[in-house]
Length: 300
Image (cartoon, rainbow, N blue to C red; front, top):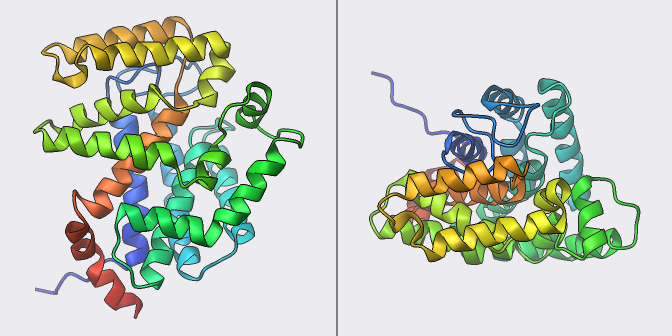
């Protein structure tokens, strides 16, 4: 029997991103968002739309990991992202399914690649630190410029108008919601013995409760945004996934979001990033170094 050749490290990182995005679309219940159960607050997309998008993006995330290994400047990463976005839009007939993930998860893949190049353990802490040391200054400049230039997206327009934290601000600060809220919540729920489905729902609600999700503001205004955060906090305060009927309670929130046409796409992107970290790092730094050790030998 032929020995199985391990995946090159950049494919491991990139394919983990695709699997994480699949985990997000497959998750149910999640308030207002598309799943394979229903289309949430959307009339122009369904689960199959997201699958076409993922297929179109399958090579993008490994390329970002390779570019990160090379220490590519942000302008080069941005060009890869724009090309990926164009492929996504062609695959979905112009529907924006994963633009936020192309940016956020793409930057994380680049950071993971740079961590490999530096010979550091693949841990969440190193992903964040290397992102900031390698591209943080450029991201901070872009965040500052975005406050005074003409917005080019709904998210930028909403963030500028209402003084919210945009995706580029989150990136410039090392994705604080992801690393300080979403990822720890996911790990805590898993450590408490909850299954992956429940843990992901808990992490999503914890993210929704605090994130400046410009998707919510774009669709529902500030009133809708504040309503959504209050609903998430109420679910968590009532016990979250530790309630016996948590699925039913989460579906009640989902139906309420659909009635108001609310969809927390930003929170969904952050959850996918947390799932990506879990795939690469497990629950400890030891798990991470074990998972990516063969990749370092391939790259050497």
